[in-house]
Amino acid sequence: MAKVFDRITDDLQKFIHAQQIFFVATAPLSPAGHINLSPKGLDSFRILSPNRVAYLDLTGSGNETSAHLAENQRITFMFCAFQGKPLILRLYGQGRVLTPDALDWHTQADLFPTIPGTRQIIIAEIDRVQTSCGTGVPLYEFEGQRSDMVEWAQKKGDRGMWDYWQLKNQISVDGLPTPLAGWMERSQQEIGGN
Image 1 (cartoon, one colour):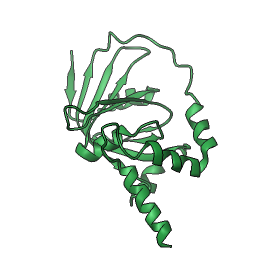
Image 2: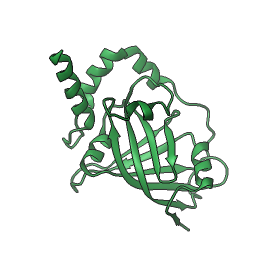
Image 3: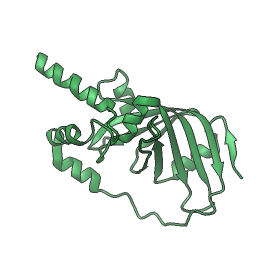
């Protein structure tokens, strides 16, 4: 049976800290738009308070979460127990994107390890916390985090990553602009103005 909370309780915070993977879901306002659901790993999730969380967003083949948050702020996180006692935890809230030129970028970035390929930070105010049984979730053993993404970003380097963002991360599959595109444009203007 589902239980609803108005905050992330201490027990739920411990559960989150024990997980090696979480999922992020967002959607555009248009009913014809594509819903996005992404798995996330590495050491990229932080609980800032019982009603605020953040995660370090690493470069991927798209940038749907960023585009959707810029349009409507809706976000849902899901954690599943793949080991031990079954549990599913969902965090519902309103999110925003922090780009590297944001005033509080360094304050937030300092909460995470330095990971090559970091492109933005997602911060969410959580207004609904819901648990459910999770008895239908299979058991898996954690072997470790993959290194492929980090190695790929290291190999690309700063210039290669910038070029990749320009090519793949400025608009969503539905044509919505991402905040990363705005940051890249502002950065180019600053370089051109100097």
